[in-house]
Length: 357
Ligand code: NAP
Ligand code: ZN
Image (cartoon, rainbow, N blue to C red; front, side):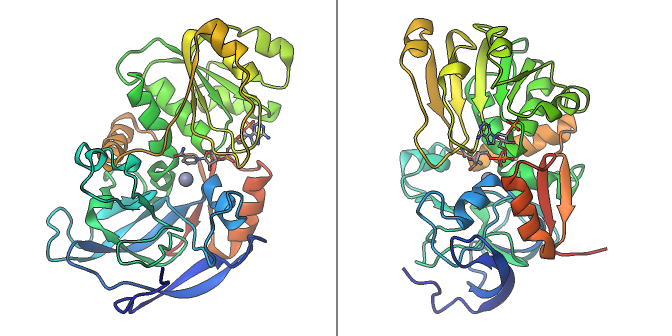
């Protein structure tokens, strides 16, 4: 496992964490030359996902330092490999969580490469050439064109960036559960953060009744008035939770920290689904009785495929869905990570990487 390979000749400025203190500092590193199937991207913006915190702090015990986080990337193509016909110089593009997959297995062939056994991620992964991948907290990225999507012209590059992870991660379960074209369902969203706020927007765009299940009373007014949620309940208030017993068809849990699934399961109707996308470091409490009595199920979902990601961006353009963001400069990354860890952002930080006027 090499950090660089002989063709890693391009010097790039970025920002990295070097240990589990999670502190980000400027970091110069190398990227590979633009290969035949690669495109080079000048990065304009990169969202700050809670997964970045899990990585810089080594919450999951898998971090290879130095880690250059960032998998909500938008930018402009500056170079195109000879085998690439889909993109041209100047195209507005996005890169999400995926950097490579085997391209041969059934999942890859059926455009579900996000479930390939050999999936490699945009940062803290091992690319085909054996090098460690570095993410979007950097000025420039070389990406295989199969893992790049087009950003529709109507979407602003800053407010579109978080769609590359937060957006697709909540879109894919909606699609899997036929919630795109069957309006009128009652949907719950647990956790109103980066993923949660996009999920409310999709839920409303697809014609559903959306209940937010939150620990933060201060988020209620905006959730209803700005994001369009129909109901808002506080998960730590047993009376409010009881008022929604057996009312929801589908719940998306985006919580980043340890919590019990029992009270949330009770909100589902018979045979309802609790979909986990949040990824706490420790196992969650999953009591059997709420599953048994309601014949309910718990599922998980991992980002989305490249095909779904393009489709999701096009759907966002059609419905004018964009993220609610706070843009920060590159010297504010640590402050933004601290505030995100304290649940103090509405609803996604986006780093202005290029710093253009
Ligand atoms: P985020 O912006 O921090 O949002 C998480 C929300 O969870 C918070 O806003 C908060 O909402 C709630 N929350 C936080 N601590 C809590 C606690 N102790 N108990 C109950 N609720 C709590 O994070 P994010 O970027 O949306 O990411 C959320 C999770 O999804 C992370 O674990 C991330 O790694 C994971 N993720 C998974 C995938 C995937 O492919 N499955 C993709 C991207 C991210 P309230 O204030 O409303 O309670
Ligand atoms: Zn993410």
